[in-house]
Length: 260
Length: 260
DNA sequence: GGAGTTTATGGAAGATAATGGAAGATACTG
DNA sequence: CAGTATCTTCCATTATCTTCCATAAACTCC
Image 1 (cartoon, rainbow over the protein chains, first blue to last red):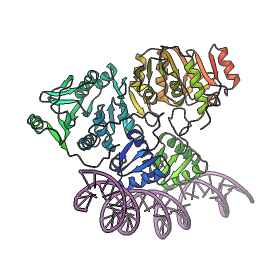
Image 2 (cartoon, rainbow over the protein chains, first blue to last red; image 1 turned 90 degrees about the vertical axis):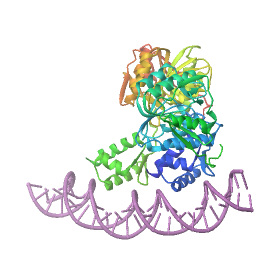
Image 3 (tube, protein in one colour; image 1 turned 180 degrees about the vertical axis):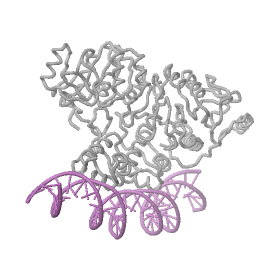
Image 4 (spheres, rainbow over the protein chains, first blue to last red; image 1 turned 90 degrees about the horizontal axis):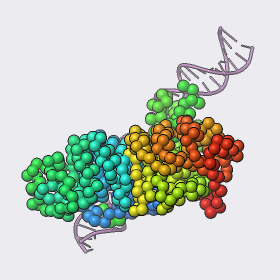
């Protein structure tokens, strides 16, 4: 990829993510950290972004643009690590279904050029890839769930019922011995359709959600292939899951990733 | 292939792709890299494109109505006024279909709390209403058209074929005696479905697009109820439209929207 | 129609720019 | 204040650009 194009891509990415580490940007554009560092320095000259230690942030978030705020505050480093670990599980060229929610958003950030086709009901995820000509982003229909930027409702369910993907990347708000839980009824329906339409199912759930049950039961572990979590997950439940044949990935939380 | 023809082809390619490597262009037009390099240098003289290392980029990718570029939009004050005038035509409580494109985006900005239900294939418009609990925003399914933030494809068409609204607010990139034109084939299909599904059809088209025809014919005036434009529209065509029973609204460009 | 001239084309050699990595300097973390 | 990560600066490698030249096509003039 050529400098001009790469820089435009970096800028677009920062519009969506607000902040990004150099590592992350390098992965996204398929270049080395050195190169991205130079690009970021160049872009700073143009006043559009500002360099920070370890990354860069957008200087003037364009309110008119379709930028969705992904300013999540809980377990950011954990989710970041989970995102990285989960993205590593994806084979190049696979087409993936990506769930809404901040954890899945972090996975999307690390997917980079590995995936060509993305199917999602998350507007932030859609936006993340929308600037790129190399990705085909399929957005489900549906009604926007206020503030989450998630598309819900029968149209969203219908979209995933019609689609098929190599991998589905989902998250939940609770996981226990009997299965996975979520707190939004409308989202549970969609997630079930996602699971049904994917050859492989990966759940990304940070350690604090282990041994917790939310309002709605989503699914048992029959169709779950992988669970990606962080090292803070209780060992007992991790062992239980492994005993059931689930590949449990424990992402080590790295001390970088400064708080936004 | 003759130089002139090849250069036109290169320019057209860049309009669509925004960036391209010389290698890519050479392959596209069936010439050597050396030749393409010369062409690109020549085109740069004509100010339409800019050379970069390894390729070229289009200089003004926003000759087109539907490119959503925040940096600089053409006819901003006009579109702003058109947006205001068009929003005034909407009755409180109506549900509206909103097209993609910058002009329609300006209409959406002025709709405020008047409308309860919005149906759109434009991600910027969707985002505009997404923070509010007072609006139900229905987003069509579809594939993101790179850089436009517009959902296109069969799923988008299908969504509007199933929906019905009181009003559809659309825009185009050209309007002449015989009808309205647009420059994107994929968007034309969607707009036709929007028109079919709405009781009232409003077109918002700034004055510079009058007496102009784009690549694709969208529709004649049979189903068009209102055309909102600015005072810069040529009087002759305005009269022609009125003679056909179309309510033509001329929005005065207010001085409080200075040119960017 | 034909010879000479102009223009276009594709490739080659040296010059320039971009890239990715390494070593030492600097900033952050606890 | 120690340990780590990141930044700066540099260098070797690679890719691209410029300039030039030989060839081929189109044009001009006779």
